[in-house]
Length: 579
Image 1 (cartoon, rainbow, N blue to C red):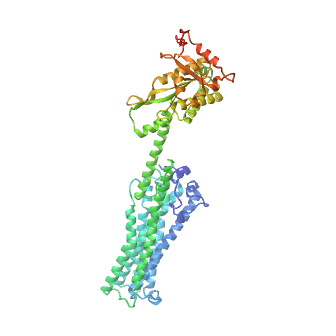
Image 2: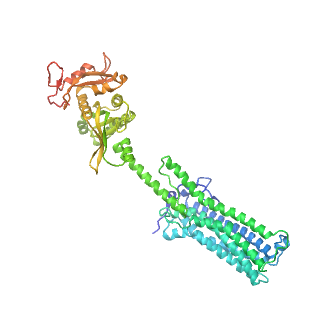
Image 3: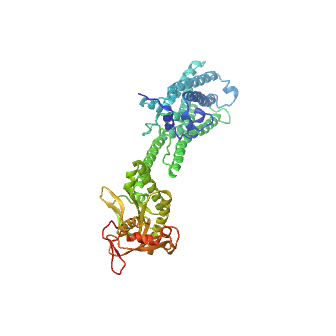
């Protein structure tokens, strides 16, 4: 069952037809607005627009047939009067009323039949009902039906001439019939091109859900029309003229100038310009629309679409372009979704290098940050509020890490792991990590009323895709990753919020290293050697500056320890939850 088209569907079906693509002289414009606004017109406005189109089409048919009729009349008169270009031998010729009668009858017949054939399609357009298969077929056959109407009209013209002629001999009637036949061919070609162009708004709406996938009125057909009008018809007319003179059917040239040949040449030139203009625009309009759409896609606008209104190879190209851009839009949507899960850099590398598990050892800076008592926070408040808190926390982390050219490797529960130097290499990953840690501490303190601990380390790790062939993820494996997690726990227990290893400080630039102060040493869980621990000056303060004192941090470091070994000053972890 056909369903109402509706304004929204019309707008989707007719979204970006340029002013050039739509025959303005037929369909007009609504209060000077852009053509795409026509989709929003109510029924009465569409009816007014269609009445204007029908009247303009009738005028165009009359104008075309009159022009070709005048040319044909002049050639017929010249052929039978010995090429004398005078008023007495043309308008005053005995067959003048019969020829004019035939042309008038043929023109009126063409107009009436042509309008009658296209009126059901225009009425359908006004109704706003969705097109079914039969309607799409009828829209597709508009140019063909108009050609049949034109041929029938010129056949009627020949009959009218035979009836109106005073003394219609068989030879003269045959000569006029041949002349009218050539006129019918020229008129049909121009009608075909005109009708194909004029029916574009109807085609856009009719094909909106079932665009053309096959060629119906090919470009080659249009080029044949050009050849017929500009070359074949004039040349055949020239051959018939000379054949008639050779057989003594037509009188010989009676003057110094063969005006029949001159007029025929002028007619060929004028008709050629007329048909080439129509064909050129019928080909240029779709290409122009495609060019504009390609520019939009080139600027990453994957919503660009072109209207499918051409029934030639260009229409198939229009549909193919829309299908291709829809695929690009879906690919971009999947890429953005993929990047949100794995990060922009990992997504870009996966798209560039394809699937597969690969990786390499590289020196990176590692930042691990974890919220204090997230379980208790979740128990004390609504789950939605907890989710919002975590989203705010992770948003700040991602923003700061991105600002320092890092990569958030994963969000896990209430913690985040960021890598600096992989998958995109950095000249100085240690400095970038330490600077990001200080900025992150400032942002989190100012924005969120929660406790957290952050650990910073630097070292050589394996960075790459880990998992199974069917599912894997980008990750980093190495001692630096473990150390950053241990330092994050230590920061939470020691009274400060940020701690970095001595290795990270040693590898950083002097300017960045000066922003950190040593707060003691510690043997972290799982490690045999002592780790020297640093904290940002902005956090612990120096010489009475505001903030947590170095002594308080050292006391915090001592708090989880069970015993102090000998003379080395090494704190040994005896269990107690220490990293």
